[in-house]
Structures are given as structure tokens and as C-alpha cells.
Length: 462
Image (cartoon, rainbow, N blue to C red; front, side, top):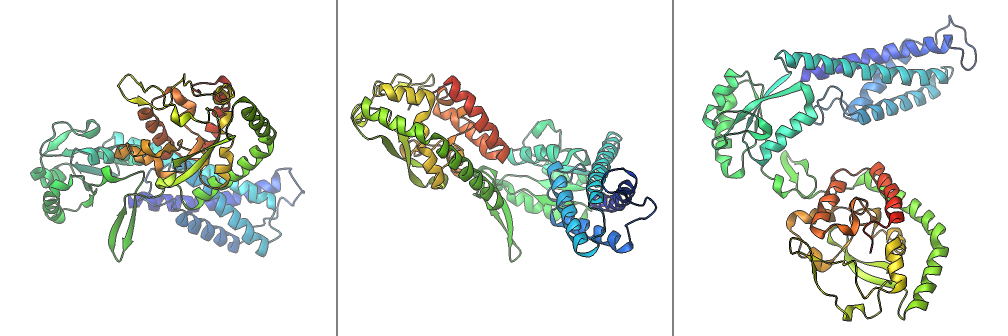
């Protein structure tokens, strides 16, 4: 695996120099911008050294070659694009303060050539690795010890993240007859040493449950005489809320079981997006809010705004605002209990007699949610996220359902645009967890756009 990283570093360094020559030549011969002398190069040894140092340091800092994060030869396209962009920006800034006569258009050409060459290098590497694996020569052969949930997670991760560079030859387990992800069971734990020798294994991954940690220790010692890398998957996967982290404290590994899903730059971008978009929405909708307030007052006695305590991010309680859609003494008029097909209680019924005439229209059009813009501005909610639940509902959550509290609650979300109130509560969580685990700003934008269509059709709203 380390040889692949060295090859990629050397290939990228060569590609950088080729792209620099090509950019300089293209700027002199392509008739764009100010005409230049086609025989006069703008390159010199210092520029070559400068671009080599900038690209290498930037790629290392942004973990482009970090085999512990991603050993696929194609890597993560977004990470590669980000690294090339940052390195080119730094290189252009250094040129501005040193060689200001270097054509600016040549920097654009350099960025294009550099990105094309690096993508080409990784595509060639992918093809070569695929051919080598088809001929029985992967970069690394892995033996997986264990066949339970942790082993299945490792098998899936190797398949999706490592691609054609790694091959799992099979599993060893004392009880299982079929390995995870369809892998063959090659033997029992006592056979691991012989399997390593016979299968020419390069790496052993121990993914046994905590009850077998005595066997883990014995296996680790028995493999000391073999030229293999041994790695351990801690038996904690069932305890992870959303995502985990691994840190070191004085050489002691610490595994975080409950890490915030949104932190640092990711949280800042989402918060800025919420503030900007929500402020614009408030400026656009305030006349409608005034009209709705007047209609509520004329339709039935009581306050315009309905406040209800909900459970927010990490279980924090807050007061959520809505336009009142029920009669003022709705709490005293409990509706008949409705059950779904599995006998579970439905907390929001479509024909609730407590809903007023204006309230029914507001619910159908989702206009009753407009006051929640102020919850977003206060930082208690987000535009997109799991809907905030009532405290008594959260108290009946199963442990796995509490994962939906890992992000700020939202006015709309993946559940709302995939069925809204037509879905029972116990199915909502699956949609919310999908959103949490696949969060991106682009996903937020897609949900907001789909929300417009759902609101227009009134799907599931009552």
C-alpha cells in the first residue's frame, strides 16, 4: 500500500511540472489575452521549485495521500479538486509577490492541465490495480477474523472505500458457517496462523465481540512471528450514536462514541446559510404573517401564536412557535386515540375536530409553520433537519431513535418531503437518520426545493 502512495506522489510531482510547461507554452501560442512573444518562456528554476513545494505541502496537509483515510487510487474527487484549487491559489499568490510578470492566464491554463493530468493518473492507477487483482495480485490481502456486526461493517468498508487495491481472502470464526457479505469461512480461530501462511495474507483484521477478547490477545501474540500487519476493530459499534472519533491522549487511544454530527466549518456554513435564507424569507413573508394573524383573531378567540415545548439538538428543550390552528381550549378536548396498522398510537390525526376553519387552511398550506423562522434566527432550529418532537414522545424512544437528536431540528426535512404526516412516527426516524448520516449543504438545498412542491400539493399535511 505504501508503494502506491510513493508512486502517486512521484507521478503527481511529475504531472505538476508537465502542467507548468504546458501552461507556459499554451499562454504563448493560444491567441487569448495580450499577445506574447512565443519564443520567450516565463519559467525559471525557482518557479519550478515553488510549485513543487506548494503542491506537495498542500496535498499532504489536506490528506490526499493519507492511506488511513482513503486508499482508493481515484481517491475522493471532492478532496482532489479542493487540494488542487487551494494549491493553485497559494501558488498564484506567491507569484504575485515574487514574479509579477508571470501571465495570469497561464495560471488558469496550469490549473486546467494540472487537474486533467492528476485525474488521468488516478484513472490509470485504477485500471492497473483492477488488472492486477483480476490476475490474483492485489496490493494487499486481508484475512478477517470474526463474522458478526463489526466484521460485516469492516467488509462493507473495505469494499466501498478501498476498491480494487485490497482483497479480503476470507474469514475465520469458530461459530459462523457463512461469512459477512458472502465471504467464505476459511477456518476457525486456531487456524489463523496457518491461513496467514497458506493464503499469503498481508494484513489481519480482528473483529471479534468483546466476549472473545481473550482470544484476541492470544491471536495477537501468535501472529508476532508472521510478517503481517494486525489491526483491531473495537467492539463498540452498537454504542455509536451517529459517528465516532479516535484520538490519542498520552499514547492512549480514546474512542468518542457520541460526537457532534455538525461541528467546526460544517456547522458554521449551515448556520450562515440558515441566517441568510431565513432573513430573506422573513422579509418576503411578513405581509402574509400579518394577514394570517388577523384571520386567526377573527376566526376564533385566543392567542395568535401557539407555543409548545419541544426537544431540540442533544435533548435541549426550547419553545417552538406556530400560528394557532386549534381552538384555545384544545388541551381540554382530547381526541379519540387513533392507532396505526401495528397498533401504535398516531399522534397527529387527519380529522381532528379541534382544528379551526382558518387552522385547517393553514395546516394544508403549511403556513402555520411560518413563525418558526424566528426559532431559526434564535439558533434553536434550522431550516432543514428532523422535526422537533414533544418531550413525552422522546421519552418513549428506543435508544437507536435518539440518534435523530444529533443535529438541530428543522422546519422541513427528508421525512417531510418523503411522505410527511402520512408516515407513522416509528418510520420517521429512518428518514431522519438518512439525512443525518448523509448531511451536506447541497442536500439541504434539495430538500428545500422539494418542500416547495410538497407544500403546493398539500401532500400529507393536515
